[in-house]
Image (cartoon, rainbow, N blue to C red; front, side):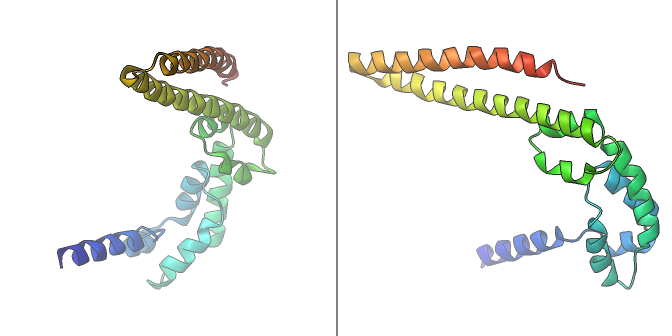
Length: 177
């Protein structure tokens, strides 16, 4: 019974997370500010459809003109080189679409790609570190000289790659805006 209760609670929590805005928020929303906030965070303009659906259940209809005016102003603040870099460093490649065709798109896109390169290099270094830890544990547990030699060679190769990746990371980070 307790498991069923937890499952129902989790389901309600998950479904509640699907709402774009609560009923009380819908009733007092300044749609220009909502649009600006969404735009300045790089949220797609299509979010208005979710507001329309969720707020419509409460009998509230968003003002699409005010929302779009706010969103247009907000997206200009989002589509910058610095935000492209930040999104790339976080591995968020999907944000480029909201900037396409807007002022700042070229810089945003260029720095997004540069940030993504740093992110990928960082991920590779993290994977190597995990592999090093696994190999060192195996080396400590190994009884065979041949296996120890093979593990040391693998560790040496990964260490060499880590050195190369650190140099690459330094070069990539020099591209930051």
